[in-house]
Length: 71
Image (cartoon, rainbow, N blue to C red; front, top):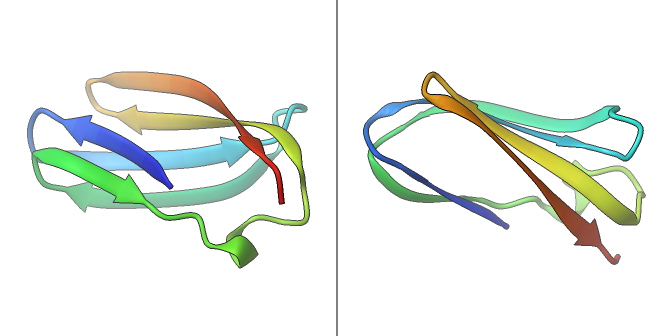
């Protein structure tokens, strides 16, 4: 699960990439102001393990983070 906060209503795009930069998952949507969580279901990512990177992009900026997928 990936959580994020938005200061106002806007469109956001969440991307998950492997260490080579290959995009594995993408979801875009319009979100209201406040806290949100995107759930990554087990089947939504290919059978990859280890370090993955995610990027949240809105009209106000881009946030890049990393995570570890263990199973």
